Length: 413
Image 1 (cartoon, rainbow, N blue to C red):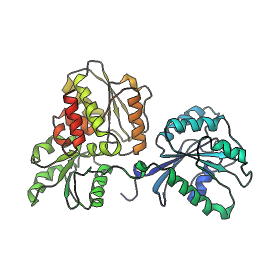
Image 2 (image 1 turned 120 degrees about the vertical axis):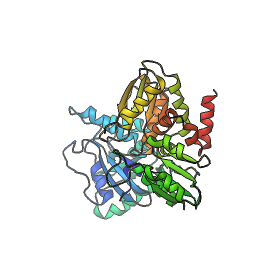
Image 3 (image 1 turned 180 degrees about the vertical axis):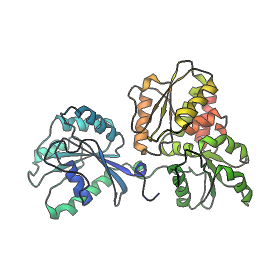
Image 4 (image 1 turned 30 degrees about the vertical axis):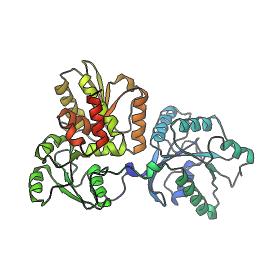
């Protein structure tokens, strides 16, 4: 992996009406033509993403969205895509024309407030129409973060500096600093052993993102990482002079890993680590106990954050549904959503089982959790559910006391 994945970047969404200068402003910040600009309305249709380094914030991704006032036949569809972009934006940038504020700006500001997304207003074209005091007062009724942008060439550096300073003030601390990957389970100088199966779902010639994150997290924490395949796991343990501080495996081999790992050695799965990183592990543990109460006809939603090509015996589409039916003996209706899709009618489901969410950022995962909580629909995680179905959940939660307490509470309501 040679660049920061999109899911680990700060997401900055650009919103506004058609032809207000969103793409032009993005090009100004980037210092190059990364977005097509034109005086014709609607030049940007679907959201366009641009990744870059933006010191001092670090790796970011800009999401340039279509105009909210698009009145073409596809306008409503594009507005839906714009709203999806807002779900994953850590900071929303509303680009407006100087001296122009309409019901569209009001609606966007309301949606950003409802999404609890920090808002920065950029007033464009101020070299043509300098904003009046009355207009500035109107803008400040929705946010105190306001900057001006012009097309005067020698003002670019000042505009970019002011923009970055405003972003830094607005960026939520949690967006820049994710929870510790191992949650204290691997101390400096310790050793984490990563069991990586090279099965048909493993991408050719590379590791998947959670595995790469696990290696880097160990190095960042001044610890050591030993990576082995599942077939070499026992041989690797035998070669070690002292046991590892933690063993991490793919959820699909968790039953075997637990059986082969000495009882005194803590162990868990990549998916459970991601549940801590992106979501709420104790809540996902409690949610998984819904499986014990499932009835015939209950609907289950499988949520995948990526849009991979499903292979034979796919984990989300075949294995988890099969294991659920075998465990419960019930006739269940199981739906699958993938990529950016997320249903609005979640209330029809008894349970949502989500992947580790390595391909979406923490903000979007939190949106999914909150939208389900608003409808009182519990959300669990691949690693938690598979470990429960295989009868090893207490063992793989053992490195995380809060998750263990949640499991105990669920077993003793």
